[in-house]
Image 1: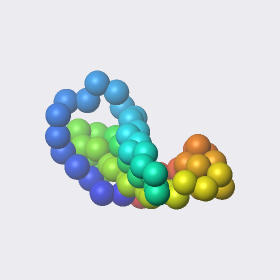
Image 2 (image 1 turned 45 degrees about the vertical axis):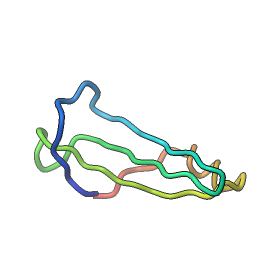
Image 3 (image 1 turned 180 degrees about the vertical axis):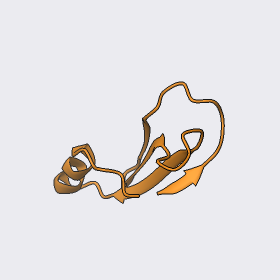
Image 4 (image 1 turned 90 degrees about the horizontal axis):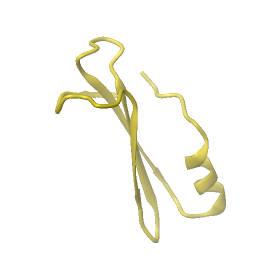
Length: 64
C-alpha cells in the first residue's frame, strides 16, 4: 500500500468506489502500520461482469 498524508481523519477506514459502464475502481484507506498519523491507500480495478462485481463485494485484506 502507498502511504498518504492529508486532511484530519473522521473515520479510520474508508472506501470510495467509482462505477462506470465498462469498469469500477475502488480505493481503500486505512491507518498506516508504520505511522498512525498517516494513511495507507490501495486502489483496485474491477470489470462489470457478475464475477468481478462479486469480487469487489468480497472483503479484501490490505497488502503492506
